[in-house]
Image (cartoon, rainbow, N blue to C red):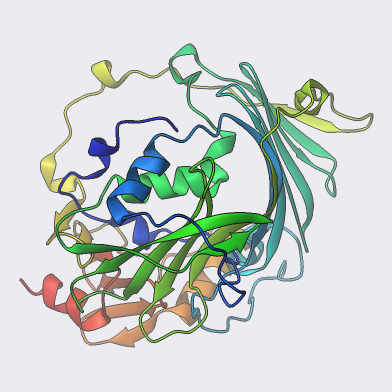
Length: 360
């Protein structure tokens, strides 16, 4: 993650707060370890200069997004696939074993109620394997994305990098209490919105005191004691993982699907009508993403084409509350408003702010 720290201080927005995935944070109630004092600026530099190219560890996940209690309406409601299962992936607890060795070797093993699922990257070979279903998918990475650190995108360090790259003047950066995370001493770096017009209370990172690698990443929602979104190592080893961890061969009896990978052709892409593109309204923590009319016109009324589609529609009808001019989904970190004309507004703001934006 060795990058110039100055790249992390441009003006920008914080759209990542409307994307959810989540995990349990460090226990800051423990006695704080004594560490040499550092300023927030020094911690930013420590994180920017860190190198987490080889490590292995255990990540513990949970979320408190305040989603409404939903009952699956589809005939496959008790299955481990379909929309209900996808919703559980967002809200249920997870444990993951992560092994990384540079940008082209990674293994992530996720364990939860749905069983165990592995993603393995070895050079340009990518495998996904579902132990419960005995199904595998295989793809070959195109050369132009071969440097993308696929596995590391799941770690606190990579998530933190995306957030730090959007720091702007609307963010107060301070140093919190020292902590112990995954058996290691860590500093706490806290990012606090300087506006009350957002659902985000604060973002905190536990930064390894020796390596500068973020060991946890947590988002707190306004008025909520439990973290709304976080990811943390419970164990970590900065030694290079064994090479055999990245070797995968599907077990006998596995159904294998070859996934074609489209070539990257941005330069050949036709010009798009600006009227169909998403827009960002406002800036900073209270920014709103707006999609044009027709983006979700029939999401609640269209005739479902499959059982999964029927279940998804039923879940949406439960989750979204009818209001004047449309429907609203409210969680602790993000609100979504779908107007009657199919426009969509989303952000880490209140429903009233989204409705007001739709009327401008």
